[in-house]
Image (cartoon, rainbow, N blue to C red; front, side):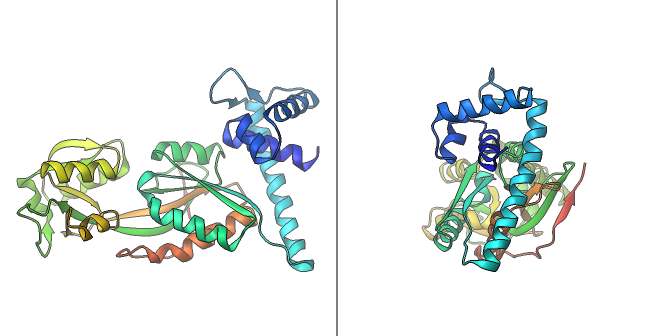
Length: 312
């Protein structure tokens, strides 16, 4: 089987879409469908379950996708090695990333633009989804890597620390806590608070941090994203604990007040990827670029880049 046909199937499987896979390979949707059916006929098995939307892979399709990815990645490594030794070859292709909304859209968009500027033949695709969707896409190899906070433990997954984000107390500028040199967790027991949904790791970690300080918070509302929490604080006068980086623009504009939290709390943000999957030179280059940029997040403490296996 030619590598272009294998690559087409892998792109269809990764995007869970024939049209997107066709677009990535510069062919029509009809041509892509015909090639996939021809591949299924050649193998004598059904690779794609077309009765669902988005489409899903059969058990045979999952196996074929996983092993074909290894073939493509090995081929790309060989191509890069040959190009590096005998030509002035450059990186080319697409990097696909699944990230949580609060991973820093501004930061990631800048990294994407800078990386693409350095490598004109490369495109970086970043989709923003909920944490469980990030894990699902990484596990089913629908993306090259994921970026999220508080990496949970899943079998066959690796994590690479990206940065620690310092958490801070956030209020309206006219709140009585505004302007304090610091706010101790004990002080928050007197105020109404808004927090992240308890289905999210960050929501559970904030509650745990407060309880460890002897505080039973008066949570009046819970949301699943930072922007909604910031709006709620600005409109109601409730108190929130948010990553300091994410409220810097509102603090500079005088919309919100941001104070250090005591005891200190940080939110780890990391890169996750499948342990068994050998990354292509392109993906490795993008990860390296992310790691070099990790210390540029204002007010955040970069942490050593040391891969860690995530186990069940």
